[in-house]
Image 1 (spheres, rainbow, N blue to C red):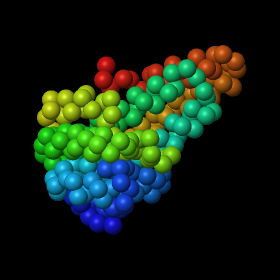
Image 2: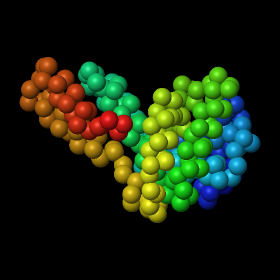
Image 3: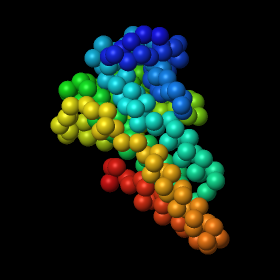
Length: 205
């Protein structure tokens, strides 16, 4: 392990040129040695602070809760809602990293560098991630995330600015459970779909 930007990380020979946060109750940030060698210290800090924002938001726990949702309450639109949530929290973590650096440019450059490394290697961080993990991977959202960073005016990073979505998931779950007990049948599926759509608004729209 080593410290980058005052954050302790695990360096691993993963050979995918990426970084990710894994774990539910005690998240750990893992960064590929290939990425450490390819980027300078400022870009590494951008990536690590992005991942640290996932830790602060407890996104690993929210991710597990949402996947449990999908298993217990299968409904049209659940997969789309999950992707919207992921996109939204990635944008917020990007902004947190930019605020920590006082400059959004290195964050955008780091995202592009990771995508380039993975493209050259023919790999995908997202496809290889453990079940309860979130990693640096822009994919089809690369352009929108970079543009959001370029257009942003970073404010000083504050822990309290990092919203956590788990409470919202819990509230919707309680509401759907109440509906399920009162009106069994197709009404439940409509309630689930509406709850998911309400909870996760498309951040790019």
